[in-house]
Image 1 (tube, rainbow, N blue to C red):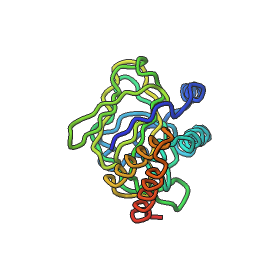
Image 2 (image 1 turned 60 degrees about the vertical axis):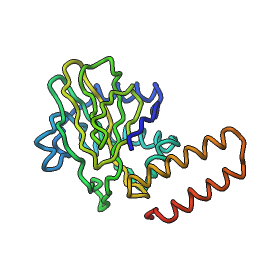
Image 3 (image 1 turned 135 degrees about the horizontal axis):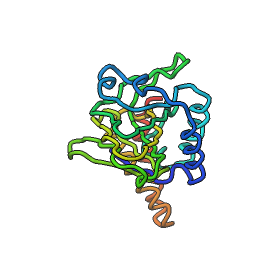
Amino acid sequence: MMLRIPQVLSPEQVARCQAALEAAEWVDGRVTAGHQSTRAKHNLQLAEGSPLARELGGLVLGALEQSPLFISAALPKSVFPPLFNRYEPGMTFGSHVDNAIRQVPRTPLTLRSDVSATLFLSPPESYDGGELVVEDTYGQHASKLPAGDLLLYPASSVHHVTPITRGVRLASFFWTQSLVRDAARRALLFDLDSGIREVNAKGELASAAVVLTGVYNNLLRQWAEV
């Protein structure tokens, strides 16, 4: 399931990230690439664990905690500390699949990457190229979202970033280990939760909402890994 979540960051938070990243020092993005991705990746990255990366990563994590759509879609158990990248003209990231297991830097903790996420930080009109293209059984889907919007997609997907031809593309990216490993089951739970929220918003059919909520929780009880 691919899902766009609008305005995860407020305009003020986006502006804070942009100003900080424009003044940041960048390193070769291949430092966090796997063996196959190293050959396809050509971008810049904020050094993992740097004070700025921790500061901005904390801002992103705080925003995710306030996003009901993110929580409903990803059902997060663990979220990898957000990373930040920069694409300049000529830079790209060829087709690849994200590593299945990630070790959280400077900790013994590992995380299974079930859900990938890209948080766009540059206005789409400020650069040409730079679309995030995700492939699934229905073809290729290109996304170039407004600054502050988040795209979720299965970490098992083949995806790439098209070459930048003008301007600079800034983004944050990270992975989530979900309570529900199976993508189809997560999608089913998300649809059910969306329906429950719609019924509750209308203030009608209270008994139906109770039944549906019970079904949701019983399915989650069967499928969750805690």
